[in-house]
Image 1 (cartoon, rainbow, N blue to C red):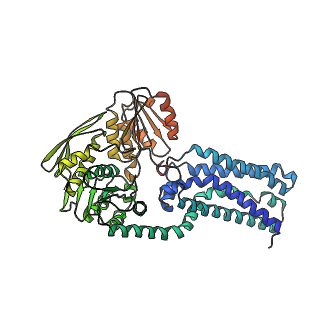
Image 2 (cartoon, rainbow, N blue to C red):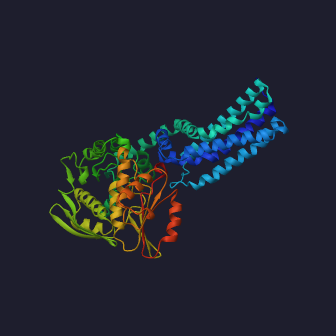
Image 3 (cartoon, helix red, strand yellow):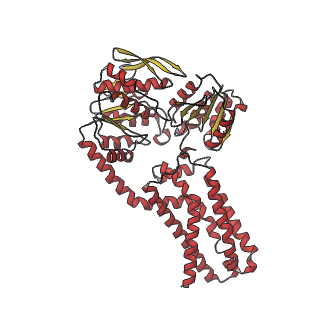
Length: 531
């Protein structure tokens, strides 16, 4: 079957417009794919997660488009079938634009970053949407010509209404196409960084654990910088590509390179050790974080312990990371410890013991875990060869790590920003610290994630720990039910707990209810892949 030139032009133009409308409706979801490191399997796990509202919203969009096309085609059939088709394009475009606008209500906590890779993905996604739209247009037009019935002409564009149901799958297809370029390019980029790390004479130190990685890394950098030129991986750059970005762009003109190492599945720490070749390692501790992907606490401990075993000159182990202890390791409790810890709303006092030596310490950092993290960093410094005098000087330079139980005072109101903390140990410490403040106490949280079979149980425990606070605000759609159940089962006041869909809604409540001297804890304000 052949198409006239005018028909081809109209169908191609319509496919471009439809692809653009679909793109506006759905490309924000690429922010989730980006948070999942462009792994389509993890993206689908998020999409089909219990309680995720996106599938329902897309189903409603598809239903609205289907009804809109059908009703307008029928109502304007007196104009002829083709005339009705033209008129029905108006509500179709309007509904898509309305959805794109309303979707902004579900703002991403971590917005899509317009990186070169994200731009390339966007181009691929638009092309996929265009091909699907063009295929539908040409296919249904061919079917219409073959059937030759007016009702077929009238309803030939109804299948376009079902495309929103395919958005996640089409985005994954575009991601797969883009990987034909991305994967080889990333491998070359990582190999370049690995060569630089192997050839560099600087000491390489890895820091891993289920909690406290970023804090210990930054505390260690502050202490080690008293004697050495230290470079650290920025923020939470703890994957091979993240470390490669830091090394290739910033170089290794330093005495010590401190690399944070994250792991969400078996083999991740091995891959990072192969890349960094660590001389020393720190394993902060082990808890059920990422139990969902590891399967068991033992598997988490085994994977984190790879760093301690691969560290050529020695390692430092937190209490819960001592399942398998290498001969050259310093162990918390035996070889070093933070003792006599006293926590207040203004800071933390403790005695740092390293071997037989003891150092009294005061820090502006809040919470029991701050003292323990400093002790881990100090033990690493002693292992590298620093004296207790140098270590004490370095501890005095330590400042709060942003978003990790960071105290902020705004107009006489206190904010505990623990929004980058998402593990059970950190949550318990944060709530304990909140109770030290004198005014009304508020907490804003979406719950704790990646705990596998323990997720409901641990979130119920979190809810129980919040009893007695003046107000509990739960954010999101997925984990909050377990937190609320635990809170009420432990005797919490139903009048003091509420659920809101977004962080912005929680902030609106706080702006009305917070008074001078009150304190609000933002606990585990998680990325969108968990909300």
